[in-house]
Image 1 (tube, rainbow, N blue to C red):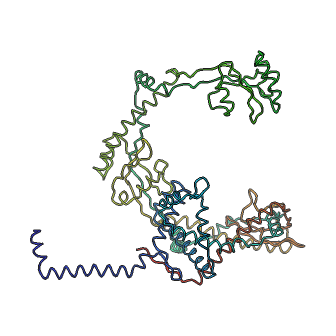
Image 2 (cartoon, rainbow, N blue to C red):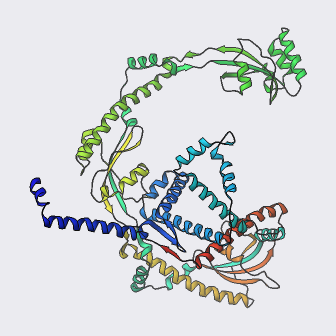
Image 3 (cartoon, one colour):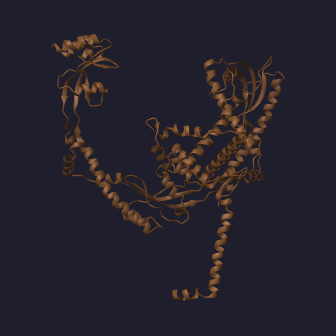
Length: 615
């Protein structure tokens, strides 16, 4: 057969066909090269390209930052293509803004010299050893981040030029102390009010909502009834710790382990310490030590001269193992023989004299004291051996019979567990690990109906899952949400009736009537008060300061109810100068951010920006 093909390829027709194929590949290659703008670039800003390579690098850096910030939750979120698409869009928009700033800086003629860039590199801590620039370290870091010296210099130069421009936005804001004090006084302002609540629930019986209204609301708000993809799982979970519970260990095994691991069950040396503490008087400490050296009992001298609480007990403290006290005390205590007394120690507490009253040598703990601990250890070691064998059999069985967990469960003697339907963000705790979620929502599991790989969740802990039921992302049917919509529409209509009633009550109040049931709140602060609706508080502080008469208003509450309010008095706060100075810095930062955003908005408005779809 191969011979016939070879013979046929030597014919004239075959050569023509072969030539056409080669030409088509060549032309497609040239076309791809010439027309690669949409593939090679992610965007263009006033004719300057942002390459997909640069976007990829920036995206990797952003992912590293998010992973460090969010931990394992990042892996869960990153498995959602829509979430990752949003991250990529935000990174690209940031790159567009940076390119606009670069172009504006060039337009203004901002520059940095090679010497400035060199100085910045030399002063970079990551390139230094013992505080000095080290070329080997510099080259090693460049290799680690896959960057050439020229590219690094260009990046640093570009950042320095950006900083020149941004410093004009963040360093020139003027906020006076008087402005800051006025703002603080406003923030600390107190208001005395009276209010009457008009409850919408009182009007629900007067409301009628038809099926057409429900259908119309549903049709125009379908996104509110979107449901995420959900899966219920069957799974087999193996834990070495569970296997250990059924393992029996003989006394001979316990004794053999104990004798083979004596070093693990040594009780460390302990010393019963006594101390004399003299606070701030070395001469007194020297007199105390001289008396002890002359033969007086340590305890008698301690009772008479020590400033420590232990004096009444002859200076005796407690039994200590090495490392339990500060280093100077510890070193002195463990350098003494039984009954020995140290020289004077000068410490942060004062002048100390230490005695080692008793010494308990390091000895092996009796086997009876550690028997339970040894039993747990031996059981776990045996369980680990059994576990690794079962894990391998689970891997083999779940792979050989990928459309069911029955054979795998029978192979390892395990029970198949099941879960209720869940999405990526409300998984049961036992299945909430990002690796499990990634497998649970993978195409192989939910679409191909296959067993997942055996997933390692830790030492001696594995799981394999398969989809029992899968529900793709969709929209709840009207029948499921009809009552919810009906309740919302009725509440909205009742709120409108409450508004009308509130306006009528407000007219009465404006006419001078005294309304029954008004609640008084004196000294209401901006931060609110328990039991007072936050929306009421927020709106009260928008009312004009009262003059001769209370300021009146009608306010919609967060519940949909309405309130009639009378603002009787405003008391300004008394701002401290120190707090005002601190606020000045925060206000300057906020103003700088606003200036930066205004600059970006202005540059975008006059820029030609093109985005290329990913190929």
